[in-house]
Amino acid sequence: MLARPQRRMVTRTQAPAPAPVAARRRRRSRRGEMEAGGDASAVARAQSAAPPAARAQGAGAAPAAREREEPAPATMKVTAGHGAGAAPAMMSMTGEREEQVRRKAVGQGAGGPAPAAPAAANAIAGLAANRATMPSAAAPATANMAGEDRCPVSLRVLAGGDDVLNVTRGLLTMQGDFRMHARLPHDCGCERYEYRQFIRGQVNHLRGGRVFRDLASVFPLPGGLPKSFVEDGDNTIPFHYGHRSAEPTFVVRNFYTDENGKLDQARGCLFEGSDAPGLFEYPVASGDVIDANILFRGEIQRNGRPVETQHWVGLRRRFQVP
Image (tube, rainbow, N blue to C red; front, side, top):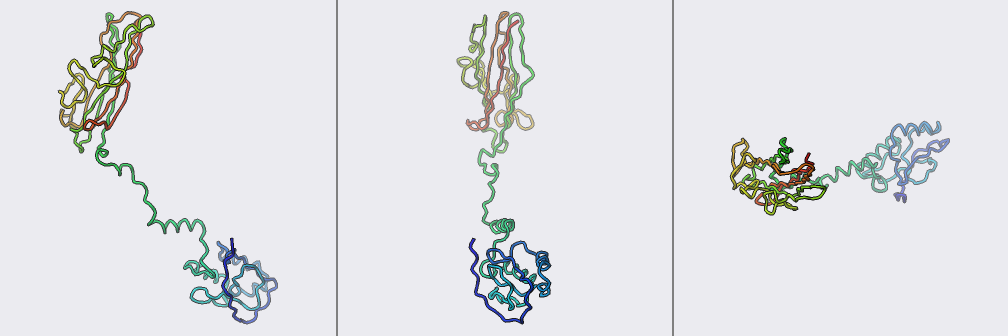
């Protein structure tokens, strides 16, 4: 780093001072200022290390603003132009240090701008100075939600306790069981929300290690049990889950209620449903294998557009008839 340019020195004649036995050397930074971190204890140590004659001389006059170290001359020199007025000729080192600190604080250090503060001080000062211009932290995601995003919905699917697997007089019943619970946003108009359910999968009847029959046609859906999702229901009734316009059913749960549990098919904010997918009293023989994998997708729709979706397995089982 280049040394800071010094101002022209002005000499004032003072009473001759006794020449020191050993010239006291003053430590300066490369910018011509007192080294950062100096304090009264450092000054005391410097004075105690000086020869007796130098200590008798006291803190001495103000230092010459020079880059190199040299013996103190008989006449005292002070730097002119320190702020509003010159420093006194016979200023102690402690006094001079305090004066320099004060001048640095107001930006009036000798010979140029005040040296940079330590890194920690700069960080704190910079934070305080820039606080007004610093960009604010990003707002939480919920603060940016608008429209229907402010309308929370929930959809839960819980496994029931009525799974069935039995063979009676050569007739197999294999059924899963689950319950659907949907909560709709009361403040956003529950009547605009409906539950929908979709189904896909495959069920095969194996005999002698080979597919004896594809049981997709057993299911009362258009074209039987599909390989891709179609709306779930029963075409023979007709029946589909979640339609507000349909009559509520209770054996197979499919209805809406208000918050108090009162039936309200048109505007209710709670939907309750149940399903038991599988086979009922299907004829089998000993040694036959039934391999079933039935999958579901449930949606909460707002004006026909999905706003919440869940996927689950309704029935996955491979059973060999005893």
